[in-house]
Length: 104
Length: 170
Image (cartoon, rainbow over all chains, first blue to last red):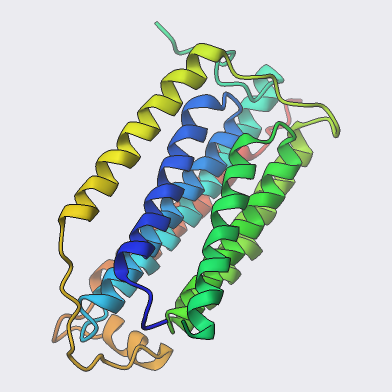
């Protein structure tokens, strides 16, 4: 693992990030949009861990940021799914285009 | 090329392929399963970087918690077997253009930046050390954000129940 340059890890994480961005813009289903957000958060986690491992190995800061991102992602997903289930009960769909009650 | 290097490239290719399949497939249940494999691959990358604690957390929280929650919500809101509608062509072009532009911009920045790898000895990042620094309140400790995150999780828990509960009207 020592021979893998840092740039390759960054290329992996940025490719994953923009895959998530593409999915977030094309998908209109709320659950698949949520899955794209998970991809984005995971790519950021890879970046934090890689920078911690390669550039600042004498600190633990990247690990802490990753831990907090994972905790916030768990809270975010559970809340989003509660909202999606509530919306499905009211509108009988999970498509973002059709849920427009609050649209001006 | 040592064995771990080859394994790293194979695992990262798998992560990218499964991530792409999860984004492009039109079957929503399959998208969740591909996302599951992609997240497991990311845990493998953490293991290859000797971050065992983070890899264990990734498997526990993402694979064991979040994906199961997503699959449950798919079962609650979708008929099995029906395909998602095709996205509009205009939207595909805009999204692909934006992501390709962003990717090229980011890769250009990486190409021009020289990252200097340090030769310093690393600290031991075992679970014991991580826990000790996280709960430390003297030197660079993280006990205050830890408390805030625990409060956030409690608030999310209560909020989920309040939002998703079904009120019976008599």
